[in-house]
Image 1: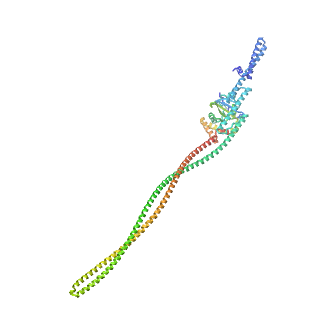
Image 2: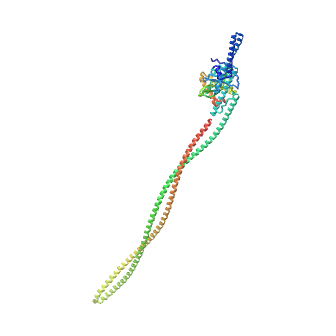
Image 3: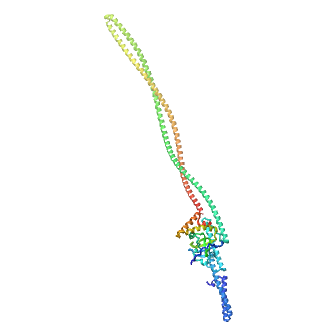
Length: 440
Length: 174
């Protein structure tokens, strides 16, 4: 790059000075040429010295421009954010040299500050707050801003540890609560389990009871039927007992009649006996008369012989009569004996019939009582039947409720399971939150 | 080209707490920039430093294990703080608190390293002198320099573990 091109691009003071220098050199050369033409050698010497001075100053000016260009390159890079830029190979310790050193110092300070600030922020990002900007070597506002960053970091550290303590506190509080809730969910699970089991058992038992109630209902129906049959049988028995009593009564009156007939017979026999005794007496008197006649006939001799035969015949008849009456007497005696025995037997029969009658009456009254009882039983059975129906209804309602309970228990169990699961998730999330927070 | 170094004189060169000693190196550790404070304190001209390795100012009292840790740290893209004793041209020494950082290009590739040294806290210097002496003693032992360096690094790790902090936190706490 020539000085002129830089001059065209940007008309700076240095460029103007350089241009002025070149113009001066050109004028001096012109002046020198005129003096040579004039052969004014004294003037030629003076102008030549001036030319040397001008050229020398021009060289220094170029060097100064080079220095400025170096500074410019570093500053432009730094202005673009390249804090790594520096001015290298600084020569001399004049104004420009000091300027270049100061540019480097500025960039050194700036880079140190930026790197320190960045590093401190990196540490803070990782949750570490012990890293501070080292203030040694930081001057003026670098130190001021560095201190302010340090204060910020310190306060962040304090806030974070306070926050951490709070989070820890809250976290452990929540963890305790979750643990409590988890154990309660566990208890709910256990209870729902046992509830479901007992519900299922109750349901089974209610079903059994319902079955039993149905069976009882059937049995009651059959019992009513049987009782009715018993009642019918009782009625029949009662009828039969009535008929038995009637027959017995009839038999009793017949027996009485027989007794009367027999006592008539006995008195007739006695009358016959008396007649027989009279006959016997007559036969004895007849025999005596026949004996007397025989004696009288014998006294009458032959004339009495015929008569004696008749008397003998009469005597035979009398003896035969006597024998006959004797037989009759014996017959009557036997007959009387038989009659007595018959009366006794009839009496016994009568008593027996009376017993039978009494029994028949007892049977009838008993049957009537039983019938009444059977009626009562039937009534009670019907009441029982009603109760059984009520029980059946109640049981089916209970079964419904229990089924509802079983379902509810299953739902509670499901809810408790899911609650326990959620508690587990929540617990691990809280652990994660706390451990994440602890990393800060 | 590398001149034989002057023997340490044990004389400490003073420098100003208000100044920064700044140098930049390329990725190989060759100096590309040295500021005027560096030149003044180390007693070199800029032209004598540029193109040289950073070890031109290496002092024998500086353990290799610390530089190993330093290079490993900055090569990973991290910053590194270290108390370092440096040797000036005359054999005098000066302590610095160095902050070494990688310089990245737009694609976040490391293009070089930047070391900004501050005037160190005397307490920090006193704290590391003993450690550095111990590490140097370990490194001076034996005939195998690699094994000695490894042993020294182990000792440095053990020392940091006994303090219960990472190196950066340890250095900044001094």
